[in-house]
Image (cartoon, rainbow, N blue to C red):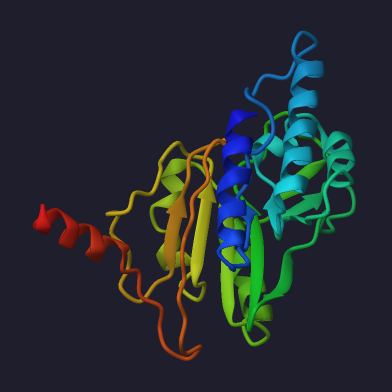
Length: 240
C-alpha cells in the first residue's frame, strides 16, 4: 500500500497548489496475480478492497473494468463497485444471458470550465468468465465517442488491452483527446513521441502501482492540444 500513500501525498500537493485534478484508472487494478485459488483468494480479495478504500481517500473520478477486475467473478466485482464513489465503466462488456451492458459505458463530469467525457473499454475477458461477453472494443469505443462528442470538451478513453492491440489505438480512436491504457507493463516517458495533433496516449504500467501526472494548460477550447513534454526534454538535454 506504499504506492497508494505516495500517490495520496502527490495528489494532495496538486490540490494544495489550487488545482482540481481529474483522477482515472484504466483497469487491471485488482489482484497481484491472474490465478485466484483457495490458497490466495482471501488475501487477494482483501487487497482489492483495500485498494478501493485507498482510492476513496485519494479521490477518483472513474475506473475502467479490465481483465483483473473480472478474474474473481461478476458477483465479487459488483460487490466492489459499492465500496467506492467513483463509477466503474465499460462500454463493451455485456451479460452473456441478456446481451445488455453490465456497467455504464461512459461518465461525464465537469472540472473548472471544462466538461470531460470518460469512456472505458477492454479486449481482455478471462477465459474463466462465463457470464460476461465483450463486443469489439474499438467499435464500442467509437460508438460512444460519437454519442458524447458534442456534449463534452475533452474525451478520455480508458483502454485495457494487450500490448499488441495498443500499437494503433491513436489511429483507431482518432476523435478522442487522450487515451490512457492498461494491460501492458509499458510506461510512457517524458520523451515518448506523441502524434502532433493527438490523441495523446499514455500508459503507467500495471496493477495501479504508478501514478502518472499529465498537466494540461488550455487557453482556448477550440485550439488543438499540443504535447510539449517531449520538446521540453529535448531542450533540457541540449542545455546539458
